[in-house]
Image 1 (cartoon, rainbow, N blue to C red):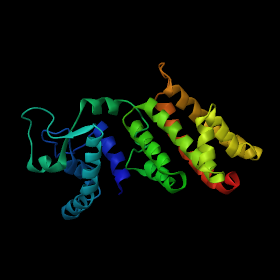
Image 2: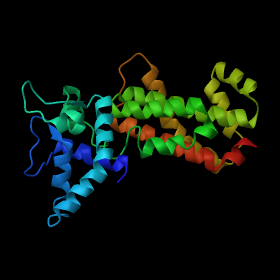
Image 3: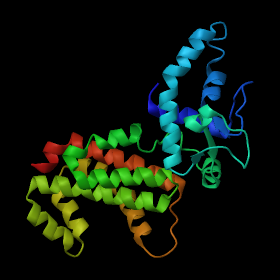
Image 4: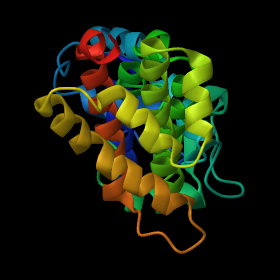
Length: 259
């Protein structure tokens, strides 16, 4: 079991905790007992194997528990004053849900499938770091963090910024950095760079690129304006998916687009 699988399980348990008959003491969740409740059917007749399996799995669950603390969803410790604490719970086994975490768990239904850093989604985008540069990597990872915090407007803005980093990297490879940056900083700079990259491409490539770029561009522009934004969970989720597809598209057609 990797960290992302453990994250998905822990989020499910936060929404519907099942400690079996073991209890959670004074904590909202008690990771060793959650694991016991989860594994008991498989190891019902072999207590020794059950405890060995828990010892194997528990480090990754401690890691995701701390990740959720870092994101403000959990905190170490008991859930109220003078609630029952244990030595193991104080050492990292027991957590309580924060007020923000309670709200977070009630909101988006995509969280189990769109992982935040560290996770598969972040890893998939990170694969393009060498091709598209540090600026792309920074913005794409920030987009994932924003989605995890339910900061959907910021997520859409970062997806749009990361997409522009992709286009800039490809255009710079096609010509030279000074020329591209000069055009980018001028009026209608983004459109100039897009024309430089796909303006003379075959129709199929143009159409496919437009499908990825139009919504990213729209949500980037809307999130950057001072008026109230309509970007919510679904739009932010789609922005992340489109960003990943744009990266794959540019990567797959790199030679054709940059020659």
